[in-house]
Image (cartoon, rainbow, N blue to C red; front, side, top):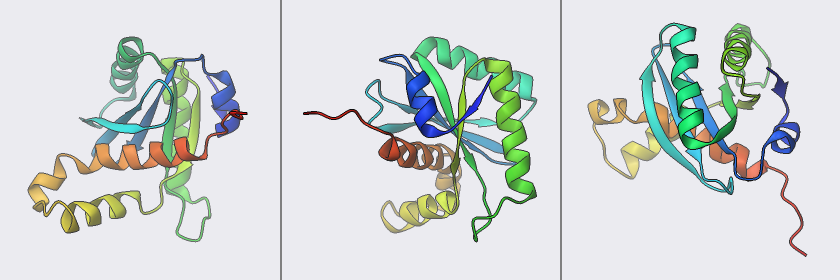
Length: 158
């Protein structure tokens, strides 16, 4: 499919298409879903990272069930903003996932998203490490997706 910037991804979506936010980790992949107006990101689920074909089949089924028209995938840029080996691996994975699902994809800077979510879960929700383990990836996906949604071009209201 296609690797797009956020503006082009927005233009490629149908009116009520949702976006899927993805936080690709080494062991688990967090998924989040936007509402149809693309204003709010909600954590969806965490899936074990395995074969790309299985992930693509799962995401295609989610797309059909929820009306997903595109993906926003977190890319781990270096702290100085440079594009290192981890970012290249994430980009390659995102492109292959896009090809297999038929969904366009936009990469979004995910620097410190998991750290911010963990900090919030510790300070605000007072969750133990074991309880955080089950939700941190999907919350990080929602964090990434929400940042992209907040940056999306919006039509003028007046």
